[in-house]
Image (cartoon, rainbow, N blue to C red; front, side, top):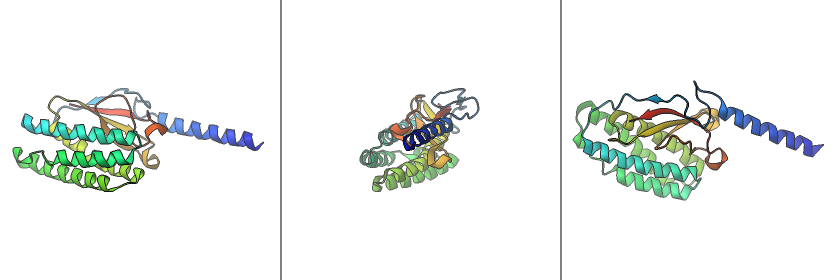
Amino acid sequence: MIRTKTLTSLFCLVVVLFDGCSGKRGNESAGTKGTIAESAGPRFQVDGAFQKQLSATFEEYLGLKDALVASDSEAARAAATQARSVLTTVDGSILSGAAQNDWNAYRDGMDRALDAIALESDLEKQRALFSDLTEFMYESVKAFGLGGSVAFYEYCPMAFDNEGGYWLSDSETIRNPYFGDKMLTCGTVQEKLQ
């Protein structure tokens, strides 16, 4: 009798987890791309040199995301340190006016998040900080573009106790940094940024 109750409870948990992740958002289902909104392009027209520098920072962000997908807190710390180093090489003086003001705000937010991740050894806290980092990286990519590279803005409704969490990827294939192999493909592509 106890074994049957345990198996029934386990089955119910799996159903709840699967149902929560496969819940629909618009026309999209978990792990699929559905109808992807495409950005109209960057808000600001900026020098290609700046986009190239931002693209290098985005590449480091992806390394950090992959460390979180692998649930490797030490690799995440190292990746955050590397990303912060690359972020310091982005020359915001190339920009002017509103573009420069926006970049300064985004850069400061990314710098704080990366510094905190590099100092944090708790994986779940790193994931929460990565969510903060993602907000600033997303705004940067949306504002300035990556000079020909493409980014995908992805979402998992179950992250952070069902509050939901976003991340960026260079692929439409879902690899969830908030759950790793526990729910690797839980999420949907929300937007394609060019």
